[in-house]
Image (cartoon, rainbow, N blue to C red; front, top):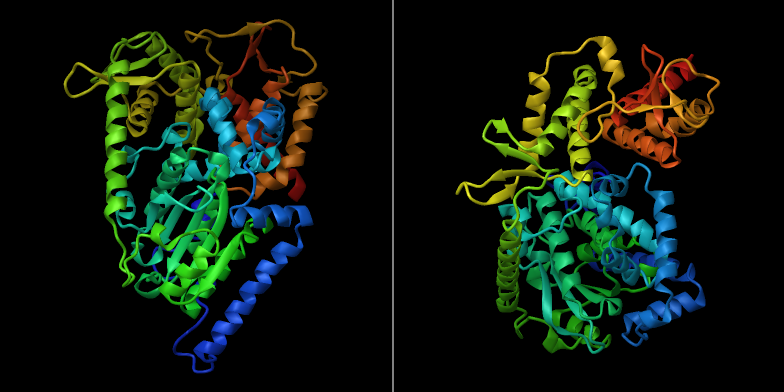
Length: 552
């Protein structure tokens, strides 16, 4: 998923929210519009419920009212569920951020707690959990970039604008629970900050993960309240509402109930827009409460949410004390963790796989590996356009990390080691490529894959499943590659450059995952393994040739 697909607008409201134009005199009265909007909402909710089985509907309604039984993990076959989840992920991951995360840090993707978090959030349904993992990492990559894809997001990763959204009080984790013991999340639309929709999404991502960590019994889930009443109506006219809903649906928390409190027709329309994109099971747990602050609090109490749990005075003024304390607690906890990690990090010198930067001079065994990669990939680098060069640099970084290496430098004190920011790593590797002499065309095509210290890998006779460079049309591996390209050609042609790169990389990994190799014959008749980059260039060429032949 890309931010373009989310259709975020920097100013104004998304088209789906431009429902009523005050200058249009043909618009019905407010009361009649309100009834029409409420009727439309009822239709949407009813449609979702009618598509559920009786058992599913009963389960979701029990969940909403807080009377459903907590699922005990002692009664489910956890390992079977994890194995099934793995099968679903393997079938879905091609071309996604999950596949890239797996190549960067397989331990992160295989982590038991990470996977169980999604299984619990989805009532131990492995297929739905797999889909959510894919969406979660796609969004995380878009919001925080490659550097943080397999790492925990902390306050240090947020910009000043991101933190303003957190401090605004527009999203709060309340100290009390509902009568079923579930944590309550409060969204106050009137406190949202405009002009920075991306920052709001980044802040909401951090907030949601913090909520998940605070849950003592994750399978119970959370209850969400959206407040759009009185002075807390949404001043942004619903801008970003759908994007925030999509983000919420990707987060690994079980939402037991979703209550939208409104007192005007426009807010009902916002609720309708959000409901329209939700799955049927989620729709059955959405309730829109229309009325004054006191009326909404009474309606919430009928679902087990006591008025005293809500941080509002009798005059509907929001009490921010607990929220500000929550933010301070986050700072304190992360400071303690960071201090502990810093002590552990600096007990050890850089290991042999690390790339160490000291000023302009690179020093250390891991640097030999980096130099070997730079030399071998310099040909393809010279033949690439600027965006492809950036992708190639990222591939080099990924290979270093897959080998257990880090990129380190001394901090300003000259004593402690710290990891180099991704932007600085890219800059240094790019400069290495620039400093290398431009190779000849034949050297560009060779692009041999370096071994542990940059040596060429010579193999015996190719197997039938290997993909051979050159005109080896009868080779089984080449035929298989041709079939895969033909099957994926329309998806490839319809994709942007970044998506095409992901498709090609995934195809390389999948072919190699079967035990096949990409081989090239040397001038002395030997067979040698070519790099993933060279294999990717070959596959991309196949896609381009297929397009030309199809048009012809």
